[in-house]
Image (tube, rainbow, N blue to C red; front, side):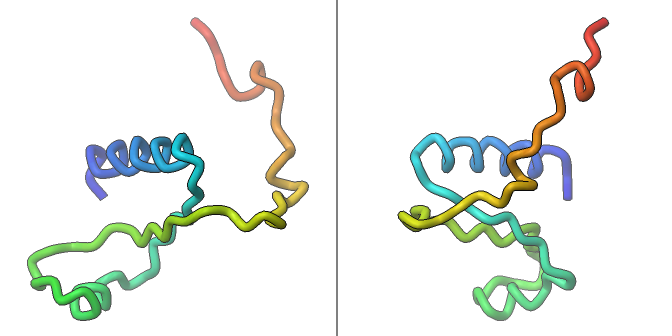
Length: 78
C-alpha cells in the first residue's frame, strides 16, 4: 500500500472516531475478490475493508487493549 494511502486512511479513521463512530480495519488476503464483488475494474487495487458504525451500548474493551506502556518506553526525544 502506498504511504500516502496509509496516511489518508489514518486521517479517515481519526475522523471516524472523532465523530463518535467505530471501525475495524481489515486487509484480507487476497483482496482481488472485492473487485468482482463491488463491480470494479481489474486495474483498480483494493487496499482495505473498513466497516464503520456506532458502537453497541454494551460493547466492552478487552483488558489487554487497555494495557499501556509509559510514554518514556515508546518515545525518545532528541
